Length: 216
Image 1 (tube, rainbow, N blue to C red):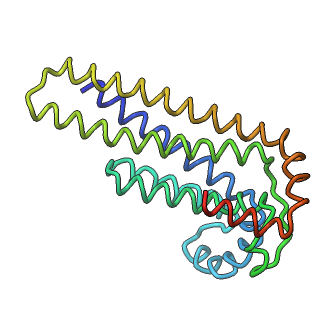
Image 2 (cartoon, rainbow, N blue to C red; image 1 turned 135 degrees about the vertical axis):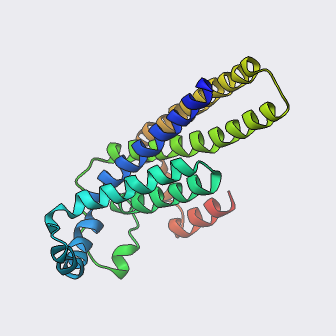
């Protein structure tokens, strides 16, 4: 039981941490800053009617998404964690757009991208979301395996040993994924000039690279 509690604690930690970090990042994006006055123009009268200061809107957003994250953790199934991941990715989208070389949202809704966070911050939050996805995806499976073993009257000590081994594997998987992602992120900085030089020699490079990337 102690091992299962540990697994659930890890789930709670990564769920709340990822949601908090991505919400803080969202609040500092250009798109959010552009839309916030419009949103408040509609919500401010309602908030004031309930005695809520609209200046605390950012904190309200943070509280709402953290509550959703907690409820998803409390439910503890794959569907709930899947919806949480979708919510986090939706909140992370404006940060990705801020640093994108092709900001298609700007074609529909013109604004000047001026993110208040550094690219490495956005990368770190994206890495945290990736780690959260892997962690929650596997811990749900691990708990299912525990229930199956317990249902077969397996010894509790043996079940705990299996769970500990699975968690060690998960830690190695998450760390390995993070290191590879970080290596690619920083490695691109060195190969980018060479890639741009080679791409400039191609006719219609954006189309060719896009087609090749699609097939890959």
